[in-house]
Image 1 (tube, rainbow, N blue to C red):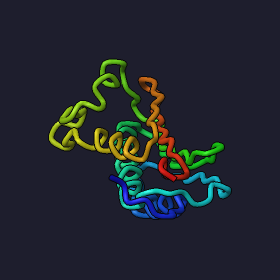
Image 2 (image 1 turned 90 degrees about the vertical axis):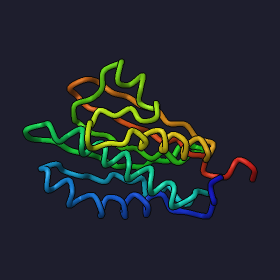
Image 3 (image 1 turned 135 degrees about the vertical axis):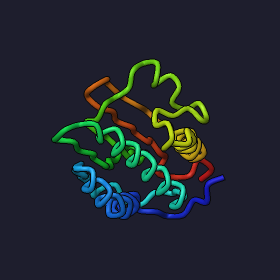
Length: 157
């Protein structure tokens, strides 16, 4: 169960991006942050959301590693009426329908020897425990975008 406290999702994204910027640079991948400064505070488990953002951004960096140039990961936020939407998008390899259908299967990985296959199932669990949804748009050879739609207020408030 998430420990919901008033949290600034933009601050969580900034901290995650600061940690990952060097990792991306070492692989020749740009990292941009595009935040909606009007997003404000939401009732979130800060540690869990930080973990979800890091996991999605790390996966995005890995997905871009095969591009020869122009690879970029964009971590962002925007506010919908009663939701905080956190996004991680990349212009990496994208996913086939077959890969996408297995994304949340525990121990499924496209990174043999490097991935555990637990990251995306954990992200989905974190989002759902917050009463939110995880949406994915992907196109082979063009990249992917993950959108975490999170209620700004805890469902029981």
